[in-house]
Image (tube, rainbow, N blue to C red; front, side, top):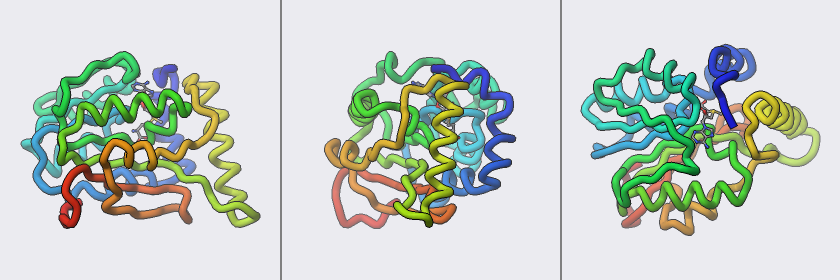
Amino acid sequence: MSFDRVAPFYRRLEKLVFGQQLQAARMAFVRQLAPRRRALVVGDGDGRFLGELCHARPDLPIECLDASAQMLALARDRVGDRYVQYLHADIRDADFPPRRYDLLVTHFFLDCFAEKTLREVVAKLSAAATDDAVWLIADFHDPPRGWRGFWGRFLIAMMYRFFRLAARIEARRLITYAPLLEAQGFRLTSEITLAGGLLRSQSWRRGASGEVEV
Ligand SMILES: C[S@@+](CC[C@H](N)C(=O)[O-])C[C@H]1O[C@@H](n2cnc3c(N)ncnc32)[C@H](O)[C@@H]1O
């Protein structure tokens, strides 16, 4: 798997197909975030989310892990390294100290993995998360059956074809990650949908229920 070849035109391709909607999904909950102590942003790509997170939370220490050197270089150019530590690694090989991060962000990342790996990735990130961690996830969502979901299903099928060829991702279809997060003690606290339901942005939280924090 490598997004190096895709990195130079990833942003233009995204804008061509989705306009501003992916960025809106990435940004959905950032401004409502309660203060956080340390963030891990995984697979952020070219740094458009990272830049906005730094802007919204200038004092938050952030670690940003990506397997693509090209993507990391774009992110570093965009954001700089004053508050961000860049980690060039494949999540499957990465080791994190236990309970280090109280903010995890995986936007359009979990959909790169087949079910077995996804299970391992979620378990690994959960082990690195504190007991009160927030996990922000923007991702695609399977459209409804029938003709109303035809265009969305077509688009998702084309995207998987493209990224399997160009970036060699292992996934062939969207996997529902919600049960995996729930099994790790996270619960969904907020959600918005965009693009007629094709995109979802979610905030998950571990720990005590009944709090209003995102
Ligand atoms: C589909 S792109 C999403 C980029 C960005 N987060 C966004 O919102 O568009 C997936 C990103 O995850 C990274 N990635 C994919 N598989 C990875 C892995 N196994 N370990 C670390 N990073 C990975 C890619 O290099 C790329 O930057």
